[in-house]
Image (tube, rainbow, N blue to C red; front, side, top):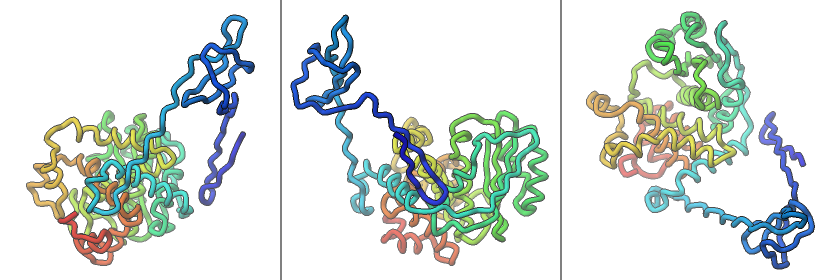
Length: 363
């Protein structure tokens, strides 16, 4: 049986459900080894699933398989007051609220322009799918714009620098040499840039075959940065760490990291959890990342000693966990509303209290 379900404008998911052999609940007593009539028939009896099999010339019920009870959905936190008590429900609540937002929203049309290197192939073949999902996740904040998608591999690195200079001269194309594609083995980066005139540039390297480069999560990550700049009403400044009025770097990267998984895996909490675990695995293996480290990590306007004492990669996993908490409490709109308020001149502390109902230090 084929069922077509329309989810938003222009996106259709086809679900193919095979119901052979049929599964039924039995009122009669099923005994393993007892006679049955229909080969491969499946029957559920007393929380076990039995199948009619052939045993010599006879057809009998097999030993059956226990049917696992569905795991209860953990209780979701409702505020920072019960956050610790209900921490096990944070992840599901954030994913669920994000999924609901995606399903209830329509995509925002973008003027998408692919610029692909002469020796390069797209690693993720349909980047607009990832972009569409992010516009639905942040519907109300995503606005129609020119989106340039510059894809290249190491062989096309010099070509990519020239293209970046042509598309967005103020973006700083040397970033490709310094960060995104330093060498052939480390040519795996991505970035998002804006000229504040409704033009956005996503730059991505092609060729790596890890899940982040083949699933669409990298495209979703970088386009989230475009929505942040779009909502802020400004292009991200060139410094490595962000200061007022910009939200902290761990917020900038954490929101993109959370969003990539919440959007791409909106139909599977199990897959969302798998990628979440993969990204944050180092946090659980390294005992130095304790409560004190984490509390000291989430600072505003980071001083110079913060940069030397903290691992920069924690802005992705710790940042994503922070955004996951905020999304679990108030939904995905709340995390993007912070950028809107920042763009209007509101300080981080004031914006946080306005959106989440208490001060950042208390949170």
